[in-house]
Length: 260
Image 1 (cartoon, rainbow, N blue to C red):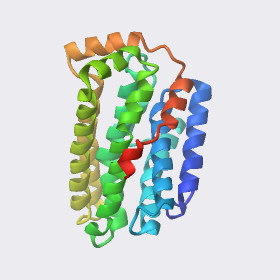
Image 2: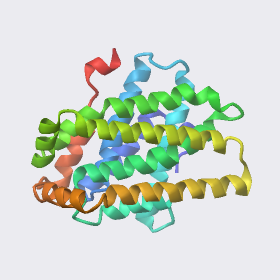
Image 3: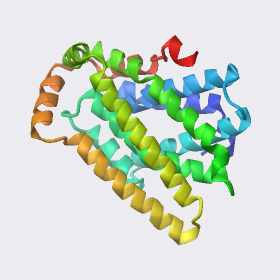
């Protein structure tokens, strides 16, 4: 297992590509979030090359720590070892037919933002949590910038999702953006709390955050009877091979206007 401090952008991309390739070969839906996360990491790497970050070395360290939490959870799941319960819920969903493509992606985003992002910020920030606020915001900005592309990509293989998107305009994307904004706010609150804790007290707080994140995951999976019925209809028309969905998600790029 690579040292978290040594997780460069290139090593993260290579690791995520291996996850996606394995999932594509096996038809494993865990690869949906991994593919989207690969697109996010490629975008962050390009923005680093383009000089978008005030402290590039710290940003790369932040992104490396952040990615390692996902990669470690994914390895643990595959080996049968314990992982955070919020990741357990996300990975377990991949064994079931019913969740639509978008639900799989959102379950991964939920665990990675609501749990992992706050923990990462508290680790990298050291004595002053405010030092990493710019890095924290930059990661969230990339996620927000990729929402349109993610929706568009999924719409090409999920006909009713695309129909809802066109009829509702940006309504569904606004809902996703709102959940990202809410998760971002929650993650920063977690980072601030954890930055003041050590030892068993810190571990208990992380467990509490994980438990709260599970509740969000369960709501994403089971949003109530009317919504679940609609999602079932959407899912019935999602017939693409998992590998094709992963390829589309991995190729998502932000709109040019989002980087101006």
